Image (cartoon, rainbow, N blue to C red; front, side, top):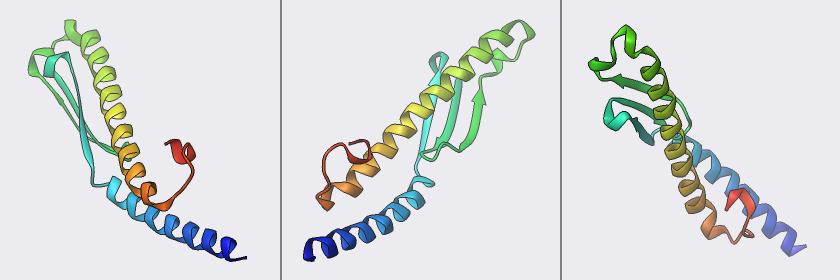
Length: 106
């Protein structure tokens, strides 16, 4: 019975820390870049896009397809970085709770 109560306490701690982590993730920003810096995308670790910057040299009709490709690449780069930031926060959160490896993507 004591093990069950200990597990319930751990679950409550984890839930509280998960909410705290979610709040923190909204404040963590990453930048995805493509085209050697011609396109930059800023997003939070919660995958909310905050801004997109495009070099003026790409603002030509004949560069439209290149710009579209660079936007996709920059968004993918930002998403990968945001996922990494989220995983790092999750590892920091669950590291001290004695949870089994593999839980929550560890």
